[in-house]
Length: 155
Image (cartoon, rainbow, N blue to C red; front, side, top):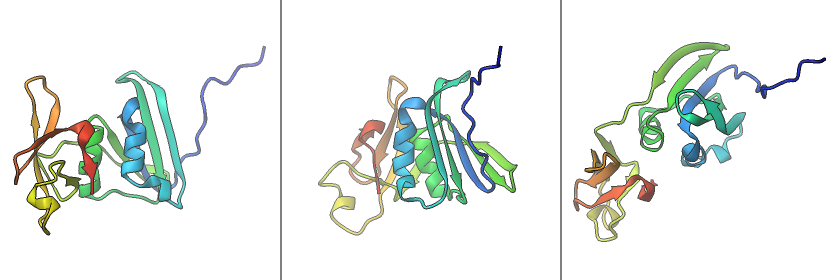
């Protein structure tokens, strides 16, 4: 009896970044938030994959891309359990779990249409807080409006 293949093989990336341990339901949001649909390099995308840590997870592999701190903050907001793995010449050079910053600057749009940031050239600034249920929220520095993560629109 022949051995049946039980895993999907995906080509290793030579140079780039793997975003692993994305909650399955947020994988596509991370993909679109990073504008990966516009990439001309190899991008591999998988979701609802088995995970011991999360039950189901998503993974994104991007060739020739290393993320800036601002992009890592965005990833942390959408996928706070994600791990970033940087690869050069097929070797892992850095592996880190993303960390939620205390504040984010100029990466998120305020939901309040009357907020000064939506009416003047003022960079946005939000404090990351947790509500009494432990859910993440963003508190606008200027209008003090809070918004849930599902309402977040990235600039």
